[in-house]
Amino acid sequence: EAGVVQSPRYKIIEKKQPVAFWCNPISGHNTLYWYRQNLGQGPELLIRYENEEAVDDSQLPKDRFSAERLKGVDSTLKIQPAELGDSAVYLCASSRLAGEGEQYFGPGTRLTVT
Amino acid sequence: GENVEQHPSTLSVQEGDSAVIKCTYSDSASNYFPWYKQELGKRPQLIIDIRSNVGEKKDQRIAVTLNKTAKHFSLHITETQPEDSAVYFCAAGGYQKVTFGIGTKLQVIP
Image (cartoon, rainbow over all chains, first blue to last red; front, side, top):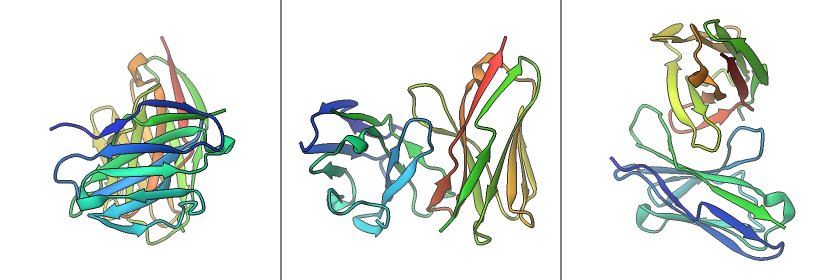
């Protein structure tokens, strides 16, 4: 089966600019996650979707971050405006809602804010 | 929420030796404990997981142990090989949500 797809793979922007990331999960996976991974750290959950519903967004900085998962498949994560501290790798992952827990990660988008 | 602590942060072993990575968690309700391996510049991938109804699980050179009373779990890699060099993350939680540790950078020296 095809893996989780993310784009772009790399993005360099100036602070205060907007940026968007796209994720296409594995077909049939109901649950989709967005994580942020800072250098030398583990992935930190930003938001989790079950189908099209955001069931856990407590760690999402809602003043500048937004996400959507229309039709319960693809998802986009947006930052507006970006700050220097947003530089990180943004990982998307998916899993089966009724599965046994394994999350399949995408390759990530490395964001650099200058 | 769940809090996961992982140590050591870096670990160097000679090829053929064993490596042990330890994690503790805070939420007694956690019942799922996966371990992910992340090679440099690549995505995290599940290598083994354990559920709270078992105390140990083994898959070839990799084994995990779980002590629910003490709230800690460990990854054991035997007969390490250079290709085992990577960052290893433990995690704890439920099937739909886990909290990750900060990672252990394992270097296997040939």
